[in-house]
Length: 100
Image 1 (cartoon, rainbow, N blue to C red):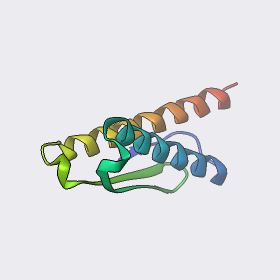
Image 2 (cartoon, rainbow, N blue to C red; image 1 turned 45 degrees about the vertical axis):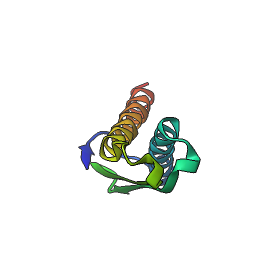
Image 3 (cartoon, rainbow, N blue to C red; image 1 turned 90 degrees about the vertical axis):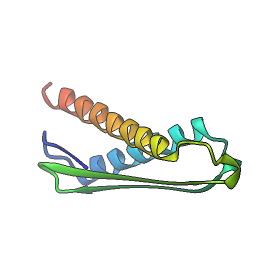
């Protein structure tokens, strides 16, 4: 969980933010593990409030037994970090537009 306090977001912006974060995390996992080796991949992004906005990113990955030596915890952590990086990028972009 990470709290980022900037401008007040519209409902559409919050939805777009969540979609971007979810897509980023999902793409990262799929870039590291072939889809056929993934038993479960759930990415949940929740946003609460508009100013400040609190964002929760939850990545759940269960791999095939054939991937027994793969570090799933590291994969989940990195996917979550990538999702938050995309959130910060999106918010910076909005912040720049609002100051013009």
